[in-house]
Every structure is written in structure tokens, then in C-alpha cells.
Amino acid sequence: MALKTKWLLTKKESCSCVMPGVYRALAFCEGAVVIFHSPKGCAQIASTMDAGSQFRMFGEGRREQLPASPLLSSHLREKDCIFGGTDRLRGVLRYAAETYHPKCIAVATSCMAGVIGDDVEAVCEEAEAELGIPILLSPAAGFLGGAYEDGVRAMMDQIIRRFFRPQEHVPGRVLLLGDQMGPWGQYTIEVKDMLAWFGLDAKWQFPGYVPVREWEAIPSASLGVILGSVGQANGLLEETAARLAKEFGISFLPPVYPIGWENTRRFIRTLAAHLGREADGEALLQSKEKELDDFVGSVLPVTEGKSAVLGIGRSLLRYDPADTVQSIRRLRMKLSAVVLYDNLTGDDRSAMAKAVRAVTAAPVLSADEGREAIRSSDILLTTDELLDPGTKQLFLPMVALIGASGEISLLRGIYRLLCRYGEKGGIAYV
Image (cartoon, rainbow, N blue to C red; front, side, top):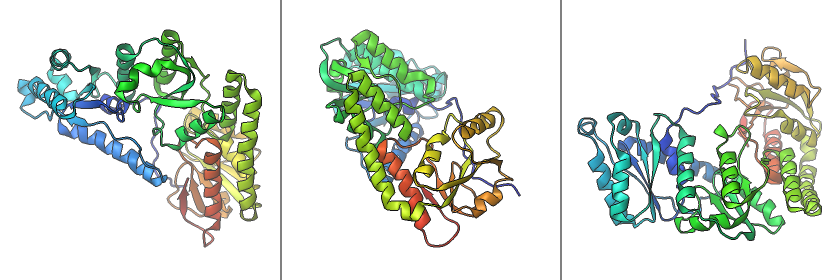
């Protein structure tokens, strides 16, 4: 019988809605209000996505530190499909101005408003003149002609065009470009920690986390760092970085993303070389390596000599096996096999097999061939949960955590699972 895994659907191209992207681009910008010209269900979807992000933060022991921007809806109804909903949009624009006194309003248009042909652009131009408040508008409507990234792109473009002004750069001031769960997420905290080692101040994280009153000052940053990942959709952050470098002279660090410990090492050395401070970079690396060595020394009595199987069902776009193999070696465990699940097919399977063989001599097995190896191992490190596990499973995150703290989180997950009572079964998450 073949191994049964829970479905894990991934895709290379986004087919999401523009509107949540518009909201996330201003989600924690003090002084901003976001309006969805839509049925109220659309706003509920965005609110649910935001709640999901909050629950993830709580699960990691963190909390959001900024108030969320108000999200309003024009509450389009069935009869508005016939008579149009522009009057409802005018009403909610006035309500937003009178209730919140915002410094900026962003409007996202739903599929319904796009299909019935509401002239949202004209309404926003009239309201901006009437209310004296800048109004940003996403040109795409819902799923029509755009996706989540296009909503973010539209807001970034309009903020840069309407608010940014060339100015003197402040030495040591850094602009972080991208989201990555915000300034309270593990990714951003680690990047800020590495920047602080060099005496740099990561003052802003754009878009989404800068007060409207400070938008004009963003081009004063002397260094920009892209918070991105391999496979970033449509190169959005790289395109924006190139634009800010050309129009405002912000020097951006080459796009090396500190995903996993080896890429973190590359990030530190790239940053140090960019600053001309290679010795400081090596000192930081030594400090982080000592953190890792100290932790590993505390868990080796449990991990050393244990056997592990690595199970993979994702493509290289979503998962790189090199860091996991290195983590197993760091704990002095034996990697007895690498199992490629049946949902990894075609060119993705061939590419993954090649990547695995480049970092380990362990046998690469099919799902059927790997059943006994999984059953007899002490732990299974897996990208997909197995429904009928014969051993303890550690589910690997979609994107590896960064920095020494990220590596320690993975190593601690392996250690704690090996410490669990009983011989078989159970699953843990990093």
C-alpha cells in the first residue's frame, strides 16, 4: 500500500484577489483607512486572513504591536447590480473622512463592481477634491485582471509616486522592503538583529507598517534591504528596489534572502562586504555559530546516533533539502534515507532528486521503497504529514526560519520529539 499524505496544494502562479493585497499594503499604516467597494462578504474574507496572521503570531509567542488600519465596505447589495453602487461608495468615503479623519484613503474594487461597470475612478477623484484627502485606487477589480500581488503593487506604486520626495540620506538609516509577517515576525526580528550588530537602524518596513505622516521621509534611508524569498511572485520587491535606487538613490543590499542557516551566513557576509566591514561580519558569524554550538551541546546526549528519514513532497521552489541535511549532521544523527512522495512528479521530482544527491549519499527512495525505512527510523522529517505514520514526525515549515534562532527552533523541535514518551507515532511542528 502506498504512503498516504495529507494534501498540500502549492502553485507557481497566484490566482488570488486584488483586494486583500490592497489592504495588506496599508494594514498597519497609522492615518490610513481602506475601503472595499464590495459586498460585505469580501471584507469578511480580508478580516479572516488578518485574523489568521494574528493566530500565527500568538502561536509563536508574539503579538502585533501596531493598531490595524480600519477596513470598511460599501456593502453592495443585489439591487446595486442593476442600479449601480457609486452612491454607496460616495457615502462610505464621506463616512470614513468624518469618523476617522484619515490622512489617506485606499479603495479596492470588487468583481461585482467591476462587472456592473461602476466608475470608481471618477467617484474617487470627486471625493478627493471634496474631502481634501489623498485617495489611492487599485486599477483592477477583485479577481478580474489581477491578483493579490497586483493589489500590493498598485498601492506601493501610488504611495511612491504621490508621497515620496528626493532628500538627503541619513547614514545608518535602513528601509526594509516587504512584509514577512511584519516587524514582530521572526524573520524581521532576526534581520533587524543582524543590522543592529553593524550599528544600523531599520527605521521603516514598507509597505504596510509605516505611518502615513512618515511616508515622505522614507527616501531619507541610506540603505535598503529586501525581505523576500526565492520565488517571490513577479519579482515585485526587486522591481520596487530598482525603482527606489534609480529615483531616490537608496542603495539596496543585493537580494540574498537569509532563509535557513547557510543563506543567513551568505546574508551576513554580503551585508558586511556591502558596508566594507568584513571583519565585523566574521565576528557576527562566530557569535551566531557559538549560539548554535552551545545549544547542540546541550541536546547531543539525546540526538547523537539516532536515525532520521527525510520525506519530501514539495518542489525545489518551496523547499531546499540542504539545510535539513545539515541540521541532521549538526545533531550527529544518521540520515538513513530520503523518500520522495508520489505527489512530487515529473521535472520537479527529477530536480529534487538531483538536489538531494548533491548534499547526501543517503539512498533516495520512492514512497513504496521508503515504507520500511520510515517505519524503522527514530524520526521522520517531512514536508507532508503522513496519515498512517509508523514513526514520530516533524513537519517542516514551508519556508525555513532564518538566523541562529531559526536553526535552533528546528533543532529543538527534533530534540523534543525524540524525548517524547513512547516508541512510535505523533507529530510536531516547528
